[in-house]
Image (cartoon, rainbow, N blue to C red):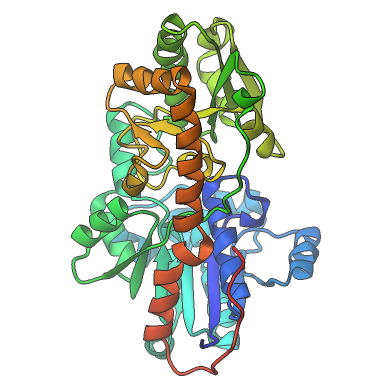
Length: 422
């Protein structure tokens, strides 16, 4: 295979794995390094000396492109002081996102310096909001370099749905904003097939690739096999609004309906940063939660959650992107019950450990079927693991991206690399 110089531009500390999307970026960087590419990271937020040393020990080539402006002084600046190139690019989008630091002229100029130094064959922009960096590059760079934007989500659709539901959205991005931002890319990376179709409709002449969230399948025995008197439902999530609303639905409707219709003892485990977010927004519901509901909070080791969980439940009602909690549940040999929204991009897993329920009543019925039929539960657990092993490895997930890079980038030395173990 060929060896390329690849530059990833991001503003998130993905190596801390604080969110599912950050884990996905880390998995991508690991895959590219294992394939023998010369990988560089352009990081546009402040980076401590400790973080720089740590990343260096891991083998990352990190380039600091942060603005290097005192934050208080920077945030006092007006939009017109940001830099003419950035202002022009944002006006092309038709919007200004709230954090001016991300769009400073300093970052753009430092990004251009890095590109001139390492001369990458490929630039992968993480998240649409970083696309402004390309406006600082010269035309000759544009001709010799391929740009990809790794989207993680259809931001305009997410903003619209959250607005319709009266939920908070971090930035008012329209479809036109998103189209203009993504138009700078030679190819767009979607996190799942539904998003890919939406991007293709938005930009009919653009190439759209699909690269899901890879996970390493690990068979974790079902707790009910040791204690058949108890069944544990589990939800693990971050602080985003759809997760908070999903917990509300679980506690108010789904969990009580399940408990009322089975003789077995059923508990509900809620883990992750969503616990604090739910407690702050729904303090009364948190205080009056039914018996058997346990909030575990943030876990440094998610494996503890899966060791205690028999069935992963995800009654999410809105949002785009890939629902990573579903992917990780399957990879831990857990049957997953979710909604049509939660199953987007994972339709091939239906019948292989994934159960899709369009209503609260159907959701409770699917959970009850698994609770009351131990053979179905065990069979679904094995099917989930087999599906993840075949479809969710890094090699399977990033195959189309690797093929695109090999086909579209210039001549580079051929490198013999052992297959990735992930």
